[in-house]
Image (cartoon, rainbow, N blue to C red):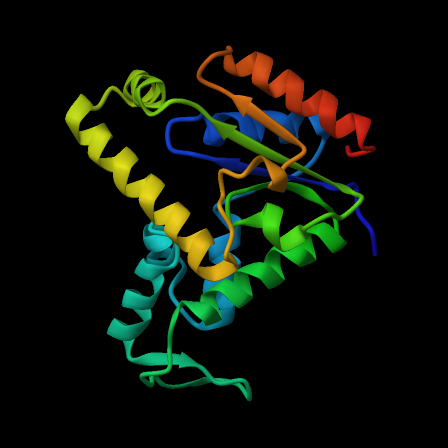
Length: 210
């Protein structure tokens, strides 16, 4: 079944993905998929939802620390079986891809992160968006939004950027910053976020989404 289309948003740290995503979804009459994704993955893998949510931002690695600490993993025949040394982020990635594809095949929506632009590729009913900007401007924007100390946010920015880039490169052999992956690339630090939302919404509607 084909839904109302899907907008994928890849946003570097401080680029406003968490603000732009829900706003775009609301304007297009679509569901914003972010926290619901690790919750679904957690259910399929037999991991407590709270643990999966707490570790989702580390881009896969944290979830496997949780699984290892629990000492269990799902059995395809039902229930759980002991963790083996073969357990790695591949299982998490495959389940996440499955959830993302089900969103696209079903009701559609706006998906933040999860390498969704790579997973959904060149679907005709998708718009792939990249939000980025110079590190110092992203840092300034993040500090303004959160009110946290500059050096603390700077550490988070560097770690988050490295983790997300490493995840996409390792799992998909792709550069998440490559414009070839997206229909629309925006420096969201150079424009008001409402303008960014307008641009994404206009582009989505031009592709028949929403």
